[in-house]
Length: 93
Image 1 (cartoon, rainbow, N blue to C red):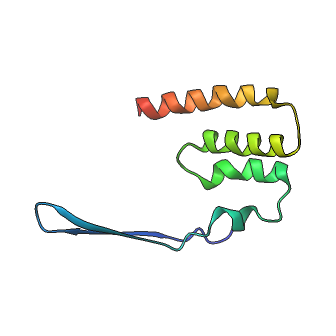
Image 2 (cartoon, rainbow, N blue to C red; image 1 turned 135 degrees about the vertical axis):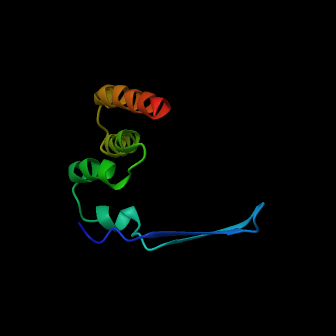
């Protein structure tokens, strides 16, 4: 996988209040990593790109591909359950 890049956060604080926040990212946009991939490979790669809510991201990618290809959306049911489990896991964390 290509260089994942870095995320830099800078917080300006006066000792009592946050006065500003600066975010700089050298992370490549996801579309660069997905470009040229087959739809099936892209759907498999999506949860690896997002550490938060990977199952939800994968379900959204699958729904997008399925709709674009005019496929039956019933296969999304298993992903709906996975997203529910992921949400429960996040709330319990």
